[in-house]
Length: 316
Ligand code: FO1
Image (cartoon, rainbow, N blue to C red; front, side, top):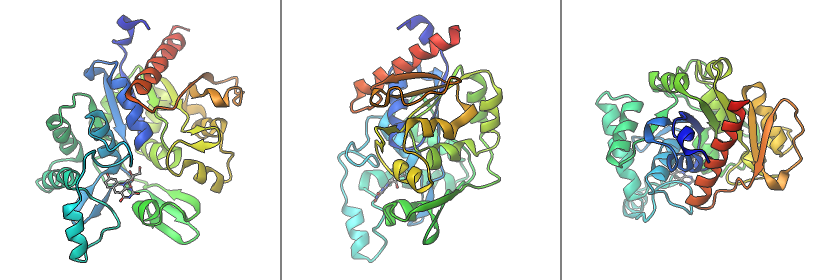
């Protein structure tokens, strides 16, 4: 890998939950912090117990800070649950599990927001105090709730994802109309050499980001390279509802179908060697490799392969 050139690349990662956080961490291991920005989905955010909860932002922050709970993919490692247990004793809501350490994040974020800080400022505050230097950017400072249309009616995201364990079949996803990107997001996109669409759920993690004005148009019109990584391996999602949703939305559960969701937006696509040969779109540059990230070394390797792949494509 040509370190000299690589460390000059300005990379923006579009990320949702676990897969996005892991790829962002892979880039964070390789790039100077000033050259990495992670634009994070906030469509899963909601108010709960009087707190503003931002699951995808927290998964990215905790993963980059090495604090993430590796089993659940959300919340903190080494967590305790005394407060949640007491909430239960007091007949408060316990369906959405908030650990004692994780609660501190929600309390401080909610405190800052109540004092007039933007979500971007509150996120920057948390990152700074957790020792993170890379830019973790909410896609918007406005609420942008994702709604899920199911056979049981339209559900808020966390009701569908957690309370109903994403079992109600998905008929559609409703994204808000009038949500605008933050100045920091626009700046990061303007300066980017490479935009990496992480192996996140295309429908409820990536599309909500692209839906924020004018992110989709900027990515379409600006000259930077756009590379997406498949969240589907061997007909299954690595984690979460992506495969089930694709089937319910009438799609094949394949990397090719994911590439098709992104369509003209992407210049290149990275998918797993298990699915090698399953994508025959001459318009699309492709890289097949082992895209499963089961360790920090896997994250770093995949990010390095994407950077090398980008260099080849940029040179053309
Ligand atoms: N997901 C669950 O399935 N059950 C939970 O109790 C739960 C709690 C939770 C607390 C904080 C947080 O940041 C995320 C949490 N999640 C939980 C995951 C969350 O619903 C998802 O991470 C995203 O919304 C989808 O990626």
